[in-house]
Amino acid sequence: MSQMTLCLIICLLTVISFVWGKLTLGTTAMCALMLFFFTGILDASQVLACFSNATGVMMVAMFIVAAGFNKTQFVKNVANAIGKAAKGSLTKVMVGYILVAILLCQFIQSNLIPFCIVAPLLIATVESMGYKSSKVIYSLGLVCIVNCMCLPLGGGATVAAELNGYMEANGATQQMAIWAPMVSRIALFVIMTIYAIFIAPRFAPDKPVVAVKEMNVDEVAGRQLNQKALPPFQEKCGYIIFFLVTIALLFSSQIHQPTWAICTVGALLMVITGVLSPKEAVQAMPIWVYLLFVGSIGMANALSATGAGAAIGDLLAGWAGGTHNSFLLYSLFFLVPYIATQFMFNRTTMMILYPIVIQVCLSLGANPIGPVIVVQAAAFAAFLTPMATGTVPYYMGLGGYDQKTILKMGIIPSILCFVVTVVWNTIMFPLF
Image (cartoon, rainbow, N blue to C red; front, side, top):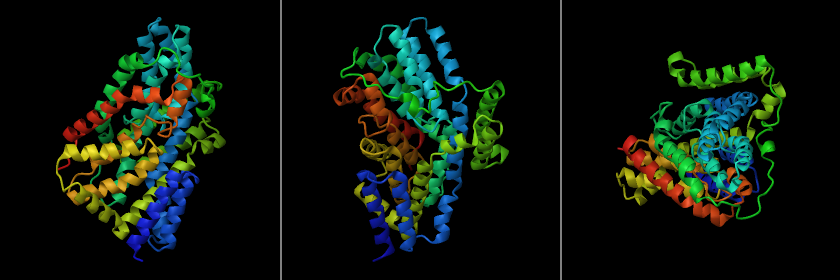
């Protein structure tokens, strides 16, 4: 049996395990990596290189930096300011809280945690005004999901480096600038924010369709809402370190420092200054995300080394009829991950599709930068089912929505996501 065939079998088994869900994502990724090693597809140095990948180090370190920022009183202070400025206006309340949620979604590499931080504050505010949570909570969930890590701030500043890692592992020579993900997604970012604030509440039910479930959002968010205030020195350090790291990431090429080093220094400073204890820093590390990334790099290297990725790309390019129509190709690159992520975790979808999309682009002679970002944008924009992302079941429970209501409210946002993303990227990132 050829190594290409072995590689494809291992990849297929990996996808089946992801969908099956009996093993954790990290476990499945590590099983695949070891199978690539024991079958001789990857040697020991290649496997170890996956663990020492600079992007993986950067991702883990940035989670620690974000955890330190989360311990500050930033959210509470902003929430208090919103309450004073709103003066009984639901629209002003929506503007304030949604902008806070969007800001947090750039700092934190998650859509669930910002949602869980802001949701209780928003619900308490609107209920004091005589509205039900069902009127507003869908809007909050929508922007947290679709606009996550769009701007190059905090965790969002690491997106370009992560995507460059995938492209390099799959044989692409192009490198995207730190601003590229924002340029690709900014049109949808603006339109979806406006839709969530001014239009979505009109389609949301005035009262819960089903009984509102008591959900422990504080636990998911790391109990940010109930934690004690940091001492003044640590509070200031939390702000300063976080924003200095963000600025350094934005200008990493000018200061000639790698992104992994910037994030690692920031993580160390969070511990040294006492913003985080060593135990809290360790708990902030998303080991499963790191292992999934390591496994995905291993899969990309295996597909590239055996020629399996190129074969898949050539096959799909053939199915596409060798078209050079950017609109049609972008439609394909959006719809496949968007539909797939309704039924499985977004990072899983991206891990599977990045190599395929890159190889299709290489086969067609297309620039893969736009398509790679679109795959990520489409996977982040999945919000029609509880399986799409952890935020969906939470806003269903807090808002009292059933599946029929979610689908009904999701028709217009889904169309907007597709049309805006495809048209905008066809213009901003032409493939040929």
